[in-house]
Length: 512
Image (cartoon, rainbow, N blue to C red; front, side, top):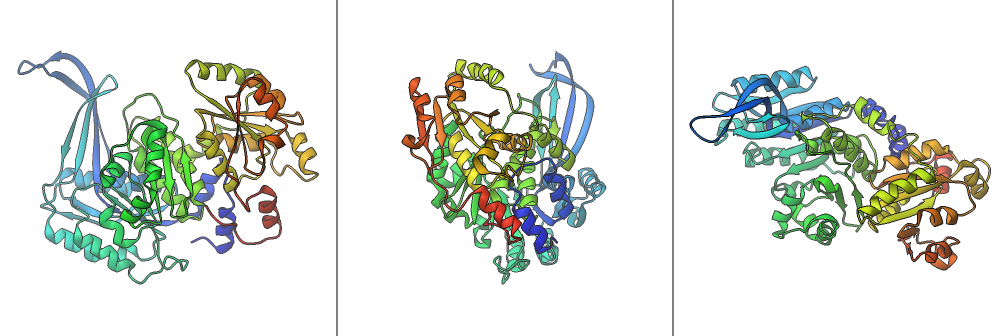
């Protein structure tokens, strides 16, 4: 368990620096994964002929691999990211169940509450591929879960929840999380107030239908777009319109799920956070070309739960989880994201600031695809929730977001001696790591007007504490017919306030 000082320190870490995954892993939060554990099979081979019985390809299997899937994949991701993980679920005594249990134990996962039953079939999903293309998936699962196994799991949940900092419910509809198990979890959490630190574990529900879990008042639920549409009985459009439509249904989703916050995952479009206070937050995925990848959603919710249980603010946790999911989609099969992989991924954003000439070339390629360029600028010294909310708003004004950073000398001229706290290379790395940011550049002139004239962004965005008339950059934007957009003002959020709070040794700032 983190000390209060450590938790306060983590709550200040809103920047996705490469050392952050290691710091979160060092917290070693205890997390229980309760749900539908599975075994994923990946069989690959060559196709050189069709079978005689039907016009179907014959796959000569040359490689077989089995890995934990479903809730077991979530557990594997948590373990790889440094959590102390326990798994609760039901498997069979069949070969698949033995294989699955052995792999979880080898990963250091506690399987005390992973029950087996001779009449249970361990859920397996075997994908058969050739030449990098999945040709067929074979699913094998129990038609019903033995009643005595459900009763035993439900009775064991109370002791399983003890001393956990977080509980993850992974309900994919196989029947393992039926009424006896839900009731067992409800009894285990009864009377434990989430407002009292350590009294109630963080509860995250990742379910095909979160509504049956609403009486437990989960802290977070993470439905995907299809699951969200089914709950609302609507059809969502694609792209940004889908995000806007999801956001319009925030109140209905929060009420239906009973959750403190809803994170809707949108595959290639990232995620959107919905909260009762009206605050939304977007992450943007960096998708790979089509590959045989599976389980990125499991990785996302695992990283999100780890970060929140270790004390990271919610919006920063979402950005970190998106980065972990981006790591996995570039790997074949059912994969996990480790602490080392996530650190390397974030470190890759270091030294990513492009000079204006190279950036101009890149933006022309985007314009050739009819994409709108949004540019904003600032010091972005110690990243805080005001920055991330502002940059998320800016991203939604177009397709490509460019952030121009004041050079160190420029910051010093604007803010005085002792600033910047972080050198421009560090500032560029952490801003570039945000999923909403596409490019970062640096300028040293008194205003961003010369850079604007060179790059000619369709939209120039600034925070709501300005008006267009106040901005020295407005004439440069208007010269070529661009638009100046003033974003919402976020009160009580500034780098100076954060720096003073840290220097004065005060408690954590309000987390978002």
